[in-house]
Image (cartoon, one colour):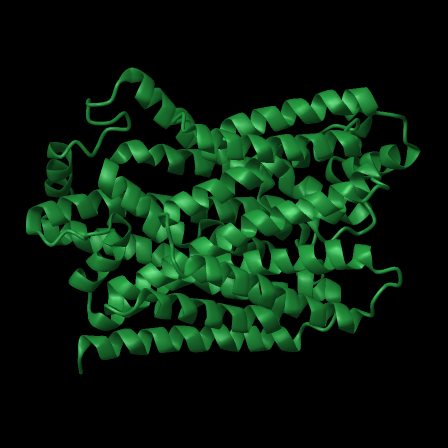
Length: 500
């Protein structure tokens, strides 16, 4: 049998499993809250692996190894920043957001939580945060489709748009019917596939090269193994790279598709178990991605045949080094990375359209059945728009992801933290911070300073939210009661000491 047969067989098995999980989730989903948040019933291990898989996307297996392959270990600062940020997100945000989102009128989306938490009667905060979600997630979802198209080109020598449509259609199928539960359960399988692939490929490559010493010797000669570059960069340029890489960690606090997993946990107390599982998964995955880039540089320097596109280094190594069936499952793991994030983004966009925009425009509340149908329609609409943007890609996977990551991190990150840790946050303060952060990201990106736009966006948003809240804050008994109730759930007996 030909190698192509085994590749197609592995992909067929993978697609069949994803669709089967989506069907199972469809049978268990009947309510609007179930479609959007799985009834707040995710076990810690599901929430942890789902958050990790939906976080990393095709960037983990394509973008990061490609950056390491092209520039060396200096790009590893992104991985360090992400690992620290993910840990802090689970530690600082997860338990409080799980408790507070339920206490505050059972909020099931991030925009509705912002509105309920600040008692915003103008509806501006919920509306604008929903629009921000739709804008940045459409770009983010488009990056996943671009990754799918590149995958198909590199693996099968096929047309870019055929691969892009294939990824989109299959992901759309299980997300459309399975909802949040379908996305979360498929994420678990996809997360496990990703981490196994990122361990197997570099290990086999190291053995093929002749051992770790041989691999690092080749890498060192190419200037790949220093966290501070190969000596050709100025001190200022190195500082920019390090600070920008670490700044990626700030983005975690504002990613709706990640923090919504916290809201879906069974209890706030289970966030601790989920944190340990999620951080371990992320450490292994990031380590494997960095190793793949470094070992890939050594392998292709020694044996030749380097990829034309650095972001396909893992794909090419798996095809060269592994049995076609095993390579097929590794390549399926690339699809898993892409599709896990894409499905989560589609669900969050759907919730923004239906829960946070459509319901606000309706004078009479729609039925639960109508909301589920509308949620599926929202998934379809966003997928179609993102697919249109992805047909003619004009940026790398890493470039598309980094901009959307910065947008969410700056717009929502400071507001999430202040919502959970500062009683005096107001709706006007949250709105000012959100708008200031988003605008700063766009402006800073256009300036091209070399500093990752997330950092200035985050700082400006935080300052705006603090200053405007101090100027507009008025005593509100309901906000005080809910804040105290949340603290009593998360930190029993310590609320009095927590008061400012």
